[in-house]
Length: 208
Picture 1 (tube, rainbow, N blue to C red):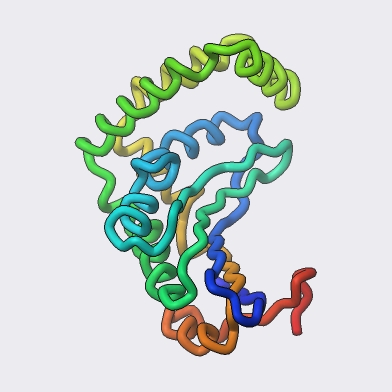
Picture 2: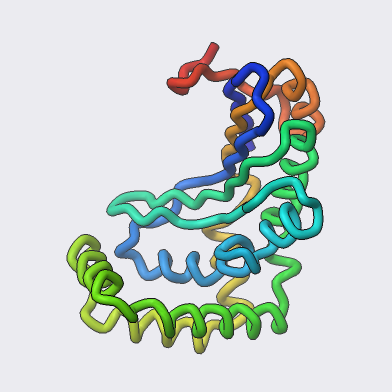
């Protein structure tokens, strides 16, 4: 993985983002990634938020998500943490994402299915939500029964299916890390993450 750092002198928090490109939102694998990611960072009940917020108190929230596009949809895990725990938070991201596959069990699959099914039951209650569904169908040329197809996948996915998706699309070793924070106090510490010398960028993403 490559690590990039954008200096914001005196920052009281560090913004952490880790991610990689995946598949277009029209690809069946897109929904597979959404399902696989749910227990990692899809909600406050995900491992990222439970560890970084509930257990450690480093942040108010930590999530991972897919941003659907018509080309390579980015998979992103992110949080804003206290400056003095930047490295510790990065190590948690590295551990939770990197070890997600071997720690995702049959019990996790059952919990994940239950969470998604309950969430889906409330997904299209309003006219705005239904309009959003129609817009999504139009934008990504999805089948008229795509909701039923997605629900069927949730119900029938196996642990092996989830593991395959994690390996193919959520490999931590293929991710890019971007940190925005106070370089004076944090840059030297980030080297201890084990991913080499961070590349320094300006606010426009240009190398300094």
